[in-house]
Every structure is written in structure tokens, then in C-alpha cells.
Length: 211
Image 1 (cartoon, rainbow, N blue to C red):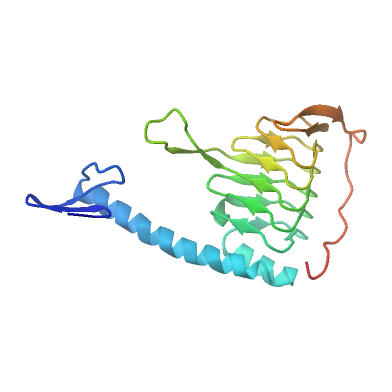
Image 2: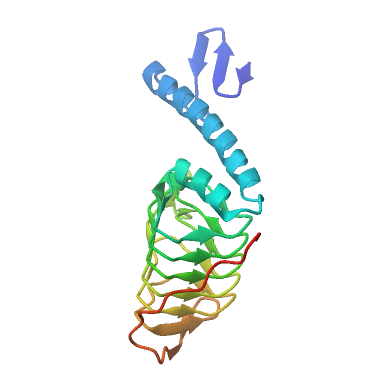
């Protein structure tokens, strides 16, 4: 008889992994500990999801910082943000992130200052290795430079670095690094122009109230 990760047979009780391979007791205990940690993390993420729909920036940002997100002065999220692992997310000053954004966080996400991120943008750190027989997950950091503008419904994949002042057109899927001050768009994103303003020192306006 097999109960999830516990195999009970005439030979006794044996811990097994998801593929049915036997596990040493020490390794099994480690997995059990991780399972409990994941459970409490999921509860906290559920709380953050609920907090993310409360229409007060200061209230939401308090809990985001409490969860480990490093947020510079004046930075904020609009409503509906979601995360996998907030503690790996760092955001510079004056950055505004649109509603219903998703920031993965299973690896480092670094976002610079005065970055304008539109609605429903998704930033991923982890993906499955299609060539691995166990379909294991891989993780890579994402870096977004200062004064970047990211249009709505953009998807940024693991390992991408977006240079200072770059512009990502709405709906793009960014799979490769983006040089400074370039404009990219499409699926996958390709260079479609250059940003006329080569030197940026502006500050973004205030975020929308109650959103």
C-alpha cells in the first residue's frame, strides 16, 4: 500500500519520492520539513493575495515589505499583485507597478528606480528543463534597469536582463537580454527601434489612488 510519499509493504515502511524511488530517512525528514514550510508559505501568499485587493497603497506596501520585498522610497504596487517568493524581490525608488502584476521571486528579481510597469505584466524566474528526464525546475535571476518602461501584458522570462531606459512594447514575450535605450516588441521580443531620449532623469507621477 502506498500513501503519497509513504510506501507500506511486507518489508515495512519506506519513504519514497514522487517517482517512487526510495528515500533515506534523513532526506525524507528534510522533504517533510520543506513540505511544512511550503504550506505556511502558501498561507502567507494567500494572505498577500487578499491584501493586494485592498484599495490603499500604504496598507498593501506595509505587508509587501513585511513579506521581505525591498521597496525604495515612493515605489508602489497597484492592486492585484501576486508572488511566489517575495523575499527575493528588490525595487528601487519611485517605481510604479501596475495592477495584476505577477513577480515570481523564486530567484532574484532586481528592478531599478523610476521603472514604469503597466498592467498584467508577468516576470518569471523559474521554468522546467524540457531535456531533463525528471522535468526539473531551473531558476535564473531577472534584472530590470532604471527608467525602463514595460507595456501591458508583457511576459519576461527567467535569466533576462533589461538595460537602462529600454522600452518593452505591450504584449511582448522577452526571452533574451534587452540593451539600453532600445525598444523591443513581439513574440519573441525583437528590436523595433531606439528610444529618442538617451539620458533619463525624470520622476514618475504619483500612482492612482484607490487602485
